Length: 328
Picture 1 (cartoon, rainbow, N blue to C red):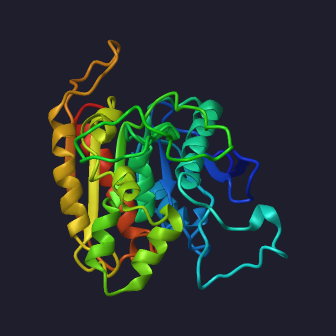
Picture 2 (picture 1 turned 90 degrees about the vertical axis):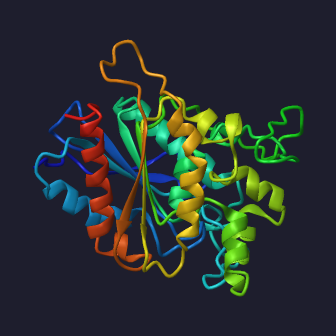
């Protein structure tokens, strides 16, 4: 069982009090993996925070023989929430929630680059996302979204239009590029196709509302940033060249995100899984890839509330990495 050296809350940005990351390096398994978590909350729930990793982290730290070098949990700027209104005239600017794509994913990438620069773990990390956190995890490796240099999309999911205007005109500087992408991604109860989830729940207006609050009303943009929609160079296949493992975890009892999201993502990842990973000459393993489905139990938020199912998904990822010769 690994013990923590120190738990730190670190700031990676200057625009918002939410631009922070909780990091816990461990004193064992120096050649292991960092587990980096991105919380959910539909891009706008201020009550679901980076601290929600704590039950999962406690379970994983108590588990014997897991080669975890450190934990981190990323906070990022949020979109407005109708049940948690703010008055812009009185709210401190650094606490005002008005994020719009690409603010959320810019923050995630900036946090990842900050962690890499601080702790030097390279690609030896597992990116774990719950709900919209899983969306953000896959967006971080998509060819069209990573680095937020994505272009306006006016074609099919298989076309790549380069000579167009940038999606965002935000004056903010772009975040630093990641020095290395994750070895594995664990998506738990993930949202992978924005248009699909809105259409599936068209009788529940809250779904359209939270998507529009985060991404606007342009449904072509929804497609362009949906990990299950973009193929080829614009998607995970073209963007995540060094990736080795995907775990898609979902519960049949999930009342908020339907299983259709998982099935759509599984299909989208077939091309990525079929291509060999780009590995360094020093890496002695094969360059095979795997996409695995892990059935979970319980409702949508139970995975992180108790930590039992979320930690089980992370343990499963370590088991698969070990089978692939990528983990001690």
